[in-house]
Amino acid sequence: MATPWGARWQRAWAMADQLLFPRICAGCEAFLTDHDRGLVCGTCWARLPRLPVPWCDRCGHPRSGPTSADGSAEAHSGSVCPGCAVLAPFVRAARSLCWVPHPVSSAILAALKYEGWPGVAEAMGERMAGLAWPRDVCAERVAIVPVPLASARRRARGFNQAERLAAAVGRRWAIPVVTGVTRTRVTETQTRLTPGERLANVRRAFEAVPADLPRLVGQHVILVDDVLTTGATLNACAGALFAAGVRTVSYLTFGRARTVADP
Ligand SMILES: [Zn+2]
Ligand SMILES: [Zn+2]
Image (tube, rainbow, N blue to C red):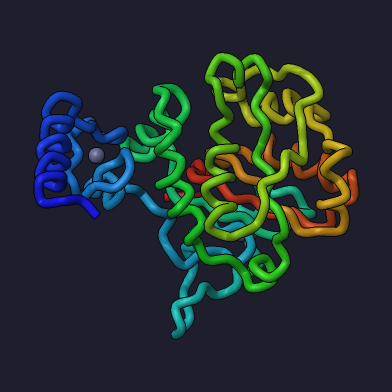
């Protein structure tokens, strides 16, 4: 236990540290206070554009239809859910925390991916891990597989952001993070491609890792990535896992792009 003098020195040191090296919010660049845990300020987390409830039970996409008395969404009356339309048929469920692009969520993602602040993954993963799932997904999920980054991009960045998010979620769910899939070839960055081009770009770009299969075959696996846009990358990874004998795959991402049907 610190002596009174020790405690005073500790406080003085902390104040000097804050004056000399002030902590800046990764989202808005405001100075962080002692109350802000992690690298993003409370105001930014409060302004995060979370996907509004009620969600589609399967894909986690907000439903615009009428809600029943208990607040859950009524079944779509024959219309195809725009979120489900993005998922490959064998995907059980998907969840995302917030919309992208948006000034706050995009800034947090940029801090994670490009500005060398991978520690922000911890706070992002904490919120992703808190999302509600169908009961069977919670009961069955045995492992988390991060979407792999191309090796050249990983070398340039020094880490895979999906791995950081997966690790933060896995700790909270108390299930292991397994490599599970790797890239078989270099793909172009998806950012500037049309949906059709994205699909062609990632088709057969992934394969299951044989050494990991004994832990995954016949099981329900959660694929984690930073964003869900057209679903092309996640569906290609899920396809590789499914072909290797994984029974069920669900997706978890921090951000989700709006579809044409969203307001
Ligand atoms: Zn902020
Ligand atoms: Zn849906």
